[in-house]
Length: 109
Image (cartoon, rainbow, N blue to C red):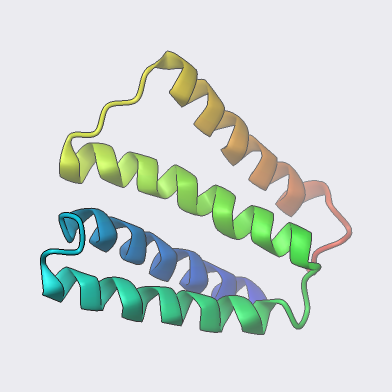
């Protein structure tokens, strides 16, 4: 169940970050509200996950997966561009998250 909570925390963090971009410098209040609520939901679920996961590994998965998803979503929704070096870096983050999930005995499977 902790993995479901972690996925929910990641999803809420992604929504919060994309809403922050859409808020246009905090000038569009509906997106500001969505940002605040989304981050609150994300931290709530992350706090639950931290009961069972080591903080470093939970944060690595939460932030790493969030970075990768936000990068793709930013390209699709906002036309953000990523160069080759950026793509390689994001790919390495995703690979790191996979290595933690597949091979680490520090997180519950």
